[in-house]
Length: 262
Image: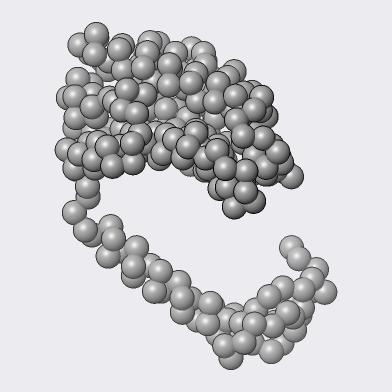
């Protein structure tokens, strides 16, 4: 419970004001405040509803989109060129949750191409002007988020293969990695186990790159400004390369195994 003297922002007659909790009770009804606050929210909900009602993008469409993008932007296709249509067809899973599997495959592929787009731009950036150094920082920051996002999708993938009924609980957990680490220690599915066994690498990545940038005073702006592709950049790229190897191992396992779900 907030003290009555605690100050909060509020919209009153279309104007933003800082008022105490007691003043809020005295001057306005809660209903009036919420009506004001919800004006933009109604528009946001309406837009979101319209987006959700549109026909979702299909696996062939996203495959073609990524391939065309890689060609246009000169992203090396050999880095990771998995076919999500082929992977989807090889994984035996209840049709009731196949849409979740497809969504995860799409997210992994699109985030990987976005990651390698930023890293390709980073490699092409050899200018030492202030603008170029800042662009390096933007590409590195984007790449940090992309790597972490791909890891979250891999965790979801592992849950779906091992115990699909828990997918919503895991993804709604406050800390997805911790929930997965705790509940899937004894996973039987070989891919889920491989992902779990690799979490120690994610722990190091989080400690060195993700947590400082997202929750503390970021360091990327410093080393992106001071160097072209120096020691810290190479350390970061090592995590990207390790994730690439993990994804390739998973793809090979899927292709070589007829059934991943009982």
